[in-house]
Image (cartoon, rainbow, N blue to C red; front, side, top):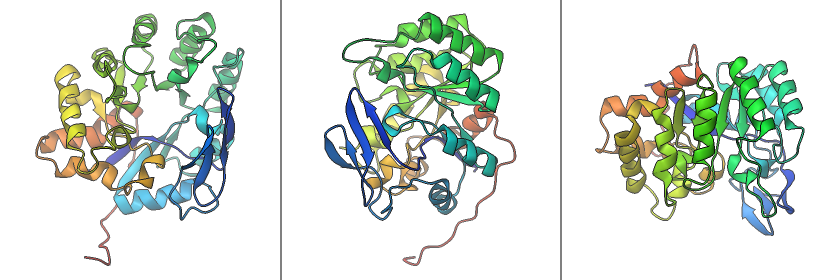
Length: 305
């Protein structure tokens, strides 16, 4: 089985603001996050550098062949670093570029990223609903961006606000740009009311759903995340297992669990068939993100075994 992580993050340093609140790397894996100190990384990453090399070590150990590197405004724009990563490790990563759609003029920045060669653009759409204003996914500049992406076969990775807050807008985008490949993140914010409406977007042929952050969303339940597996079963009943992909939301989730645990609960459950596990953990993502020659990674026995 070749495993692909459809939702992970990399950064060299966090130094940004969201809604006027500071996010900044501190020490021992901690960050100042919107007024409080949070454990953003495992404490052994003392310098706060969430690098590709550390992630590759985790991926090799967990036998994950490839990963999609998304972005989020809470980490700041990481385009320069992610472009370096893409050039250095093209078989292991698909890196998303990101423009700041909270600020008018983002279309020009996105054009530059597409010309540079980014094959995917990330949009943390939930962050576009701000205390004092809202950027609609159907506004003129945003629709121009989606047209540009469709024309250049650039994939859209998008995290929507809770429930059905933005699904009507997404339906308009999908109808207008039916050849734009779209990955809906965070499994539709599965533990929030109305999450199924986001999953239903994958009934369109160009839309998929990835589970980045599902262990975070079910953190109160914890391993083996039986509620998360039941949610995957429910989503499959709505759109089919061939529309769903595994994602870890690395590294935030591995402050509570190991990287391998973020998918191991899928392997061990009796609620999914072997064929469904193969589709969810890698085969769907391989086809959708167009990964080519995936590396084969062999199991290394632990000292505790």
